Image (tube, rainbow, N blue to C red; front, side, top):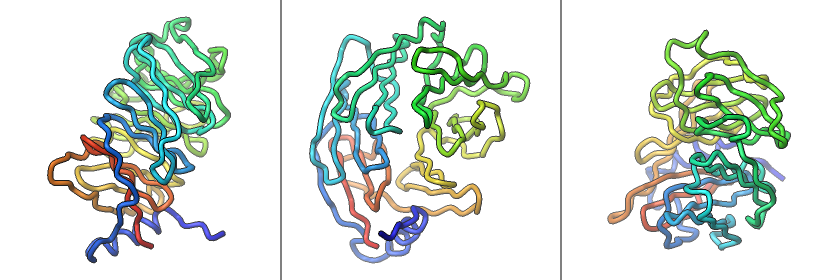
Length: 268
């Protein structure tokens, strides 16, 4: 089966953006939400304003939902592993793990580690956890028993300004930390700081190979940090609905507007 590279698809989409109707609406779903995540299988996870998490497949069909009012607001939705969705409630330092149908599997309380000031957390490739401790300025890997497996270097010794991260993700033995003021900080598999990419204003992103995909105004940008190539795809603007967030997977552009989720299929 032929496998399209993301940069190729985005370049194709950008090339035809000047043509009439470069993309078609696959499905439009009325919903008011403030967070969108897309896994590697093309499933979309939308966090409604009432704190309910709704899962849609790549065709826009509702698959599952989860809601709990016991732990406050959901700060992080991590769908790195579609079989184990992770929710983080920063106010109570609590993790909730869900299965692929969004049924609860386990809960973890980070208060046991005194990780009371962590506002970002991410799933590692082997199923463990990355946690940034803002007080100690270190990135640590924890196992599912909350034992510290790896503790990175003290960033106070390397950076003139400490990060206040908005997003954390691991891909291909690298950990990426977004900071809207500093840019994108990159760490190795041991939590050691490597370098920073000057992508100022970066809030959330997807990492596919050497490409960082993120939203900037009314565009979705794919930046290849090895080739130093940037590709843009315009996000459709609706007359009476503002763009909240956008993501890309498998030739589908997912756009969360203030009153709906729209799936656009890009033409190849």
